[in-house]
Length: 484
Image (tube, rainbow, N blue to C red):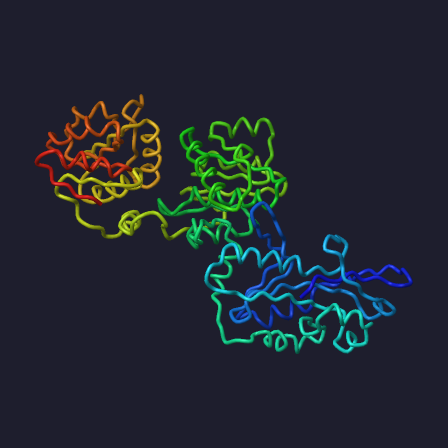
């Protein structure tokens, strides 16, 4: 369908379109409700451009249908001629071509194999087909009748189905991923799981709490949702909260990665990330935000977070805090963790304990959670020592353990620690004698720590993010190593 059409009258009378709703669109929704999916006012992004598609349908045989309304009746159009609009005419009455071109460009950017048809359809809500036939010839030259639907709504479904020239079928979830996913890497590799993307595009019509297993990407989806809402509305006032300074740095890192690997064009410096310590101060200063994001919510801060919301503001949190005022969202799958870890966190049966020194490569915190889950099924927490090379890692580990275990974790230097799992610094390694040790090491600490572990009369689990440390392990005589 070509770019068209600006209407004008030779008698210079003003024509005002009807303010009626879209009865044809609503009837199509009813007719195709079991087959197709419909979208209204949906923002799409392409590089730094935001484009709003007013009315759209995705059908398994027709592909993508873009609708544009033509709300003039026969009385309005008598004595009127139509002319093609200029490309830059912002007052043209019908400009379907802009939507069509945008979607085609989006498809060509993200699609490499499957061709998805795109159709532009004009909804003539105030005209019957006979009334359209009686209009000036200029309308017929500019408006293809075969791509227009009229207010004889009973025949519109049949007319649309004639657009299907082949027997091809299209996967609706695949089409939606191509159209709506902002988190796309080269070669069309998605950064997010299907469940995360569902939350990303969910309308924030109330305050929500995301509950999920470790490794399900709660923090990532919170950041992605914050950036997505900011991209849709640059004037959105936004703040993100994390428990401690180390968690603030973690979320800032996710923000940089998200912007770097997506179609978002935002300045990371304009996204405020703050620790929980600032919540009460911001309340006293009567700050207000349209969107408040909180990673790992705790009960005492909930009222203060709600006080920071503007009149139409929304709160989106993650965590294990139970509260009836927050609607629940869940992530049941993991996009970065092994099935064994997910099973362990759910309390299901996992493999028996390794009988020798074990070396685990990957996510330090999550691997520690897995090993603790396995250990605590068979032994008391009093038989376990945890050793960490870094204070920030120790703090993150403490939070994760406290979230998922009855036994609380304490840093060794905390003044009023109760009984529980103690997290020691590496300097304590030679003094520990409990039956099991979980030791988190990095490249710099590997030589000293592994030599000490090799002499200890204990079952040890060495955790690292780098496989290079395994090379050091294999050089120590007499150790039996397992890589997980």
